[in-house]
Length: 360
Image (cartoon, rainbow, N blue to C red; front, side, top):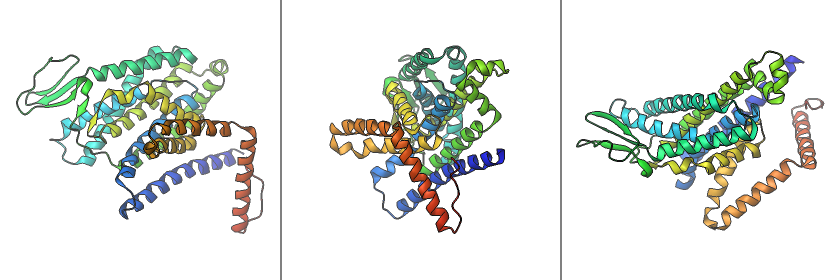
């Protein structure tokens, strides 16, 4: 039985990797053949970013069972730290690929550190109280970015939180200029880098879910008192999920920040956190494949409807309502299960195998 479950988990995880890989290969082929417009190409890196954001938040919300409304704050930490790192390293590391890799790692590490700092007081709370605290922390981080001034000149790197705190020498460059944000960013983010980041995120999250730590995290989610009674350190495992989630969000933020020529703090506000949470809920709590698909569809859909002006958000809201009703409908679940079994049966017949019962 244990071997059967392991095989089922392996097949499920493999299907996620295959879906992501096939999507990447198809888009690369279409791009090389010149079949993708500039607008579609512009969606590729952000889609990768939001897939990582959705999967990382699903680890916290779906697997750990903790509601966080400040995930965009960690994304902002990664974005601005990644921009600063890439700018400072430009004279030292001429390779854009290596510079991007270092910036992503730095963004993830700093976001993870902020995750620890925020998690120590916040994870003493549960439920709605935790959601309110994470929301407040996300807004605090956004306001910090709005008042951050950073620049570099012949005397080195300068950073302050008020206007006129430092004056750059001739030839110096202002990296982040308070509410204006970062301008003149050298865009080094690429679609292959986004694909690699998705694979890293899936590897980390899927292996964590299927490990002993992952089973302990699920136990904390399902019944906190029972978990404590068998010696599970509830706070420690909640902290692990929170910090890993923040680390992955920071890496995604660094990639996001280096994909545009300018970036300001308004991109990491409360609405961004809610959008990411919508990706998770619509794809299914704890369903990693669902997060990948929903993040892709729900990011592309509003952009594809942009030509409809005011109607596009109304149509977007209607699509969300219809999908949620269908997702939670028992009849729809039974219909989908019957369809999956029918497809499996036909595939087995096609491969010359005998019909067997579903492994559901």
